[in-house]
Length: 331
Image 1 (cartoon, rainbow, N blue to C red):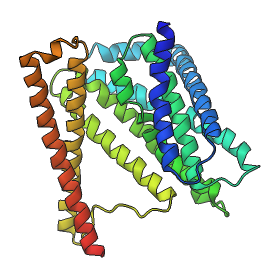
Image 2 (cartoon, rainbow, N blue to C red):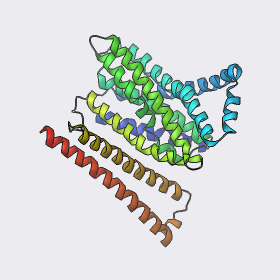
Image 3 (tube, helix red, strand yellow):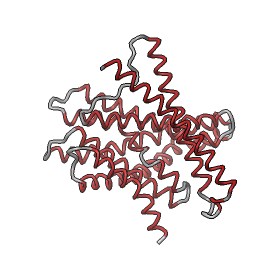
Image 4 (cartoon, rainbow, N blue to C red):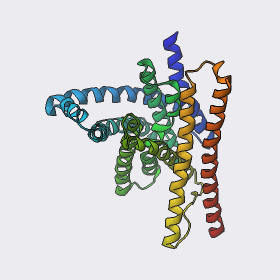
């Protein structure tokens, strides 16, 4: 019974997010087909885990990979973080993004022989595979008790955000009448971008374990995730033919630098407001419901919530200001 409940916690959040994107995209493929890609994504997650295990064995035999990591771990904190970054960029990022790419390309090529696939369809297929991959990963973490349900639920859209660039490029190539060589190159370039983003997120999420000043790197995690979510939403709008949301609209270099600074500031404020609410949820999760109504705890919840809400509203205000400036310039 416990294992079944963990399976539900692992699968339900990705399935709900898949249903959300399915409802948002017009002319979406049948839900049964998306569920097939979801299952394929979960299988690709098992394949990725196996390949990472094989990589560790082979690399240890050829180049003493474990010894390299031990040497890095016994050095200073920066070296330890460098060891994590090296593993992410050489092993984890390429294997996981490669498995997701194969999981999308193989069944898509089969379906393409029978149907005319839209650009948005390929992106939805990729989202389904990425969420299936997430469900398998959730199960591994929850089964081994190495992450909480809150952590895994918040991280539900991350794999879809990683894969969005190459999904968009793949959609251009598959839906195009004339397949150009530059579109093939774009697939590889965007896949490499996804590998780098994947590695960077895993490194930033590990930075909180280290002493200062490296711990400050963890405050860049949620702003970066917020930017990737924005990128996914922009690409989803483009495949549906919607106009791109413009935030940087001025033509003079000085004003453009100012607007870029505002975008970065809004990402920092908004991302860390979400991070603050996430930390608040982690702090409160071990407490019993009766403890939550103590006066001191209620004041702590209220003050932290208002502080993060203030930063979030400020970030939203900057976003609305940039949108308004762009509309005023173009209309």
